[in-house]
Length: 396
Length: 111
Image 1 (cartoon, chains in turn purple, blue):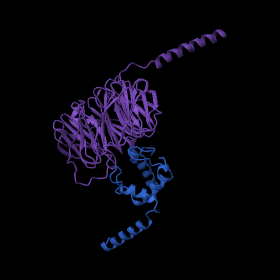
Image 2 (spheres, one colour):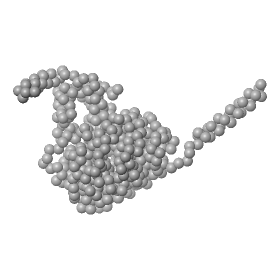
Image 3 (tube, chains in turn green, brown):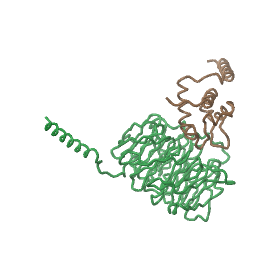
Image 4 (cartoon, chains in turn green, orange):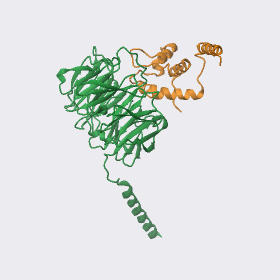
């Protein structure tokens, strides 16, 4: 009897060991086709596979993810998710779990990762400023308050973008300034301030070559521009006549800017408070066209090859997405991916695009060549979609 | 409908709306839409939890000293010189009033 029991026990142990080996060792895979979908209301993110068009894992416990965004480690394994509540969470895409998490401020709006991948920077509303962290350990290395005026007030920070040389450019919404922080030595950051950049910069972008930083202005007409190759020239204003003397529509959602706005030699910018996309020649920084669209643009994103520009809209036109053909300079297709379209993300080479429809709780995937639906993935109030290809781009 | 009768109906509606703006509660279905609108769309500036973002916090503590009337008109007319838009094309006066009252007492969660 005892012999039988012993035999049974050893058999059981062998079976368990075999099962553990099979399940425990994750299949070896890369992360180049992975990404994250933010579930903004449930504090969770989905790890997605853009080849299989499937959800690999759901990671919970990331806090308040309204207006959350993510950047990626340079090896594409980790995502750094910046939450509204000041949470900074490092997510392991391969293991589908949180690697580290800190609360770094009271109210944050996004972040960026340095050129060398060693520093993660968060931009904060409250208390205003940026904070620099070790990308591996999330240890705080530098705190740069956005103090302005008599030095007692701190501005909300918007439009943070990494630029070459382990620098970060950003704009101060309340102060109307653009700052460039050199964090090559993170323990001793050097900040260059550009005062009088313009009233209420609402977001910023750096061109894909890392040369020009642009801040869109909400409080006045025009866009502020800094040539980072020639910083001694200071900040200058472009598109100064845009919308002057005309009553703007109420802006129910701030437009977003990022380097994806550039397609070939032109930048496609969302007009503030108008149903238009502005086309700007990046060689001269002159406006070359205005393309009428269905609503007030929020995201204006070029397909990676630059042939198409996809546009979504502010409330109440947020059920629509339009596609501009950049050769023809006009809208060639209109889609209805679902209610409350919040974000779009192209596959790294642009053959497909993923679009989140918050109020229909789904992510739609479309073929960008023929606009056919390729897949639908369920997600709870999805907002931002971020693919690992961002790890290799300047300005993210 | 005859033009004169239509005018009379419009006038009556205007009088009713003016006199009863604060008393006319939005229906249950509309209330759910308004909660979602505030949480999600106002939330894009004020935060999903309404503790503030680009726009200020809309929690009871932050609104304690603000007259209801001022809150209602801030919602309807916006605040010139700031990023706060006028919602009068989206919301009626009664709806803005309903939202203002809920904000002051602690805004309901989405269900």
